[in-house]
Length: 155
Image 1 (cartoon, rainbow, N blue to C red):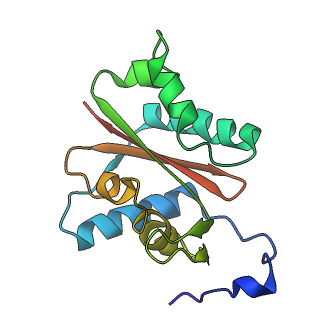
Image 2: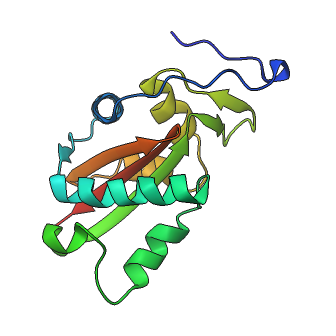
């Protein structure tokens, strides 16, 4: 069971980051709870997720999917995506310091399940829908500076 940090005490010291595998495990557990098939880790999606994580680090924060949109608007498919083949793609972004979309309160995710259930699930921007999509088959998680990129794919 997680604990909520009190925002009035200021920013907590840097939160310990989660491994990409731990986030994927939490995501698949969440999908199982909702009766949706498990997603498979895909190395081509990982190549692209790594690029997006580096984009966010360079940007200094979440970019509201600007980089993702620009990458797919470009004439050439982005790194990793061409090798994956056609299909549809989605991106979820979250920081461990996130705002609950329902309550508006700031949350400090101290466990991967909290990232999945509090940060993504409460979002009003389609993150919950992507996480529970029956269409996607493949996925990869990459992170940096307490920010997490989840790339979804479907052939």
